[in-house]
Length: 117
Length: 415
Image 1 (spheres, each protein chain N blue to C red):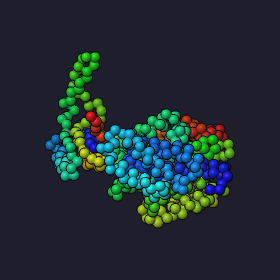
Image 2: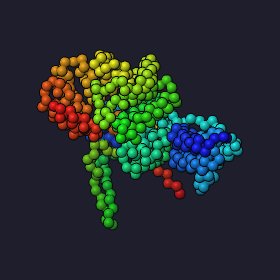
Image 3: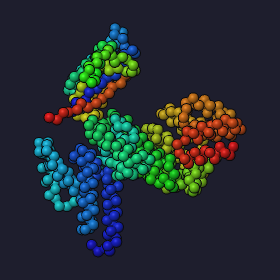
Image 4: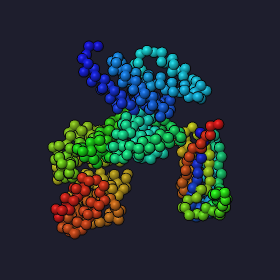
C-alpha cells in the first residue's frame, strides 16, 4: 500500500540555506532517505521550491483564473513529500517519523488511493 | 434434556445475552484475524446470532454456544466472499482451509482470544479519542450504536456516523490488527488506558439514579480494564487503572443524595462505600506499586486508596496525599493536577497560605469549573464573601451538569 507523507513547515523559521543548521538538516535528510531506500520503502520523495514560486489555477464558468501564490497566510507551508510503500499505517508512521522536519514542522500521512480498473 | 419450557426459555435468553455482550468482542476479535474486515465480521456475527435465535429456540442450546456462533459466522463469511466477484483470485487458499475445518460436526472449537489486538486497533492514536471510545464500546463491549449514543447524549445518527468514520479509517489507512511491538508498546498502551478511563469518567460524572445508562459506562469501563488485565497481566499501569476505577466506583452510592444532589468527598457517608471494591482496588494497587515502574495511574490509584482507607475526611493522611501529588506532578505537570494538589494541601496549610496558592493558579484556569468552585470555598472560609460569591457564580456558569449547578447554587444561596 502506498502512503504519501506531506511535509509542512514554516518557511520563515526554517533553517536558512547556507547556515550550519541548514547543512545539518540536509545531512539528516540524506541519512533518512538512505534508510528509506535500504528498507525498500521509498517510492519517491522530493523537496519543493519555496511557496513564493507557487501558481494557483482555478477554472470557473469556463474561465481559467491564474494567480500568484498561495501567499503564506497559513503558518506552515507544504515543503516536500515522500511516498512510501508499506504494509500498514504503523509502518508508514514509523518511517514518516524519521523525516527530519517532524522536529520543527508537521508531517501529514495519507494513504494513496488505489484506482481499480 | 428434561426441563420445563420456562427454564429453557430463560436459558435461551441468557445464552443470547451472553453472546451479544460478554462474548461479542472475543468472537469478533477472533474472526477478524481470519477475515481482516470489520464490517464483514460484524455482519456475519449478526447473521449468526439471528440464526441462533431461530435454531436454538427450536432445537435447544448447542453444546458450545460460542463455538456454534463462531462456526456459523465463518460459514456466512465464506458465503459472502463467494458472492464477491474477485473472490476466486484473491482468497483461493482461504476457502480450502476453512472448508476442511467445517467438516467437523462438533462445535467445540478452541477459539483464540484476540481481544488484545482488537483493543489496540480501536485505540490507535491515528483515531480521534471520541471515535476510539465508540469503537471500543461497540466492537469489544458489544454495545449497540443506540446504547452508545444514549450514554454519550448524542443522536443515534451522530454516533452511527462516528462509528462508520472510524471503521472506514481503519480500513482505508490499513491500521494494522496487531499488538504493538515492544518499542512502542507502552506509548500505545497509554492510549488504550486513557480511552478506558474516559469511558469510566463519562459514566462516573452521571448519577446512579436517572442517568443509569450513562452510569453503566463505569461498569463497562471496569469490565474492559478487567479484560485488559487478564490479557496482559503484571502490567502495573493496567492493574492501577483497574484499581483506580474500582476505588472511585466504590463511592458511587455516597456521591449523590437520594434526590440526586451531589455530595462532596468531605460530606460523604463513608459507611455506604463498597468495601469489596475497596479491598480489590487496594490489593491491586499494592501489587502494582511493588513492580517499581511508576506511572500516572498508579499514583492516582494510590491517592484514591488513601481516601478509601481513611475513617473520616479529617483523619485522612493529607501529608501522604500531598507527597503523592508531588510525584504525580513530575509525570503529569498539568493545571488540573496542580489544582488538586492545592486542594489536598489546604488541609495542612493556613487559610492565608491556601488563598495565596489558589490565586497563583488563576491565570491557568480561564474556564475550568472545579477551579472556581474551589476558589469560592476557600474565600468563603477566609471570610471574604464577595469574592466567594463571584467565584460561585462563575463556577455555575461554567458547569455543564444540572446536578452540579444545583449543588453550587445551594452553596451560593447559603452565603
